Length: 222
Ligand SMILES: Nc1ncnc2c1ncn2[C@@H]1O[C@H](COP(=O)(O)OP(=O)(O)OP(=O)(O)O)[C@@H](O)[C@H]1O
Ligand SMILES: [Mg+2]
Image (cartoon, rainbow, N blue to C red; front, top):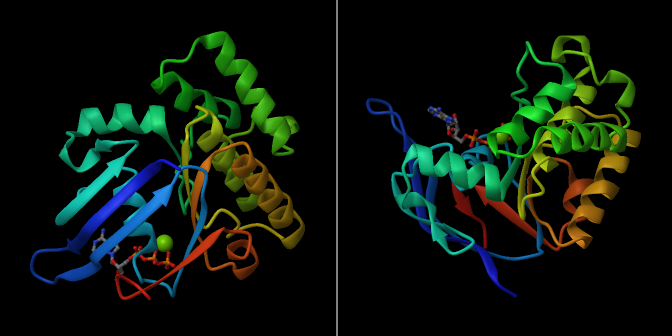
């Protein structure tokens, strides 16, 4: 299978005065269609790694290739285009726009990817239904529970039908029943050919993965 993601000797150091080495020389290859869980204690670098894969931040050193493109060489604008076409992201703290409704939050992702307006509306409704949120389509994030916001964030990550989906604690705010539903859904997405990388503390979720990567102090544990 094709390597959809190749990470080579990736290091990220935050700060100038006080330095934190959040990622320490990480190398990792992900094949198209894999479902990968990244686990490890709080502060080990999971979110940092996902943010770098998503091109939301630059590494201190090292290379990332997505779908054959060396993203660590791209500028902000090029990264934004790549992201909307190739990567769906579920953020740890949702990052929903507070003034937009659930529907509009999902539509915005498609707008950025320049999808037609008709298909935006149809797809947004489809995804909200799938997440059991059809009745919350017009609600804003502050009118939704944590778990509902999380499901809107997942719906948004699926909006552009990208090959690669990154999820940071996708079940972090969900009860066990909803978690189970989301897990089944993630598994189905994976069966449909999506490559999914999930950062999670949830061991039940991790067990769903083809491969579990354990991180410690910015390194991948062997
Ligand atoms: N913007 C930042 N500036 C400085 N240090 C940061 C920044 N973001 C993260 N860090 C530090 O980098 C390290 C890795 O953080 P990261 O958020 O990647 O951990 P994590 O594994 O996602 O943790 P959690 O399980 O709590 O979400 C931590 O020591 C953290 O304090
Ligand atoms: Mg995190």
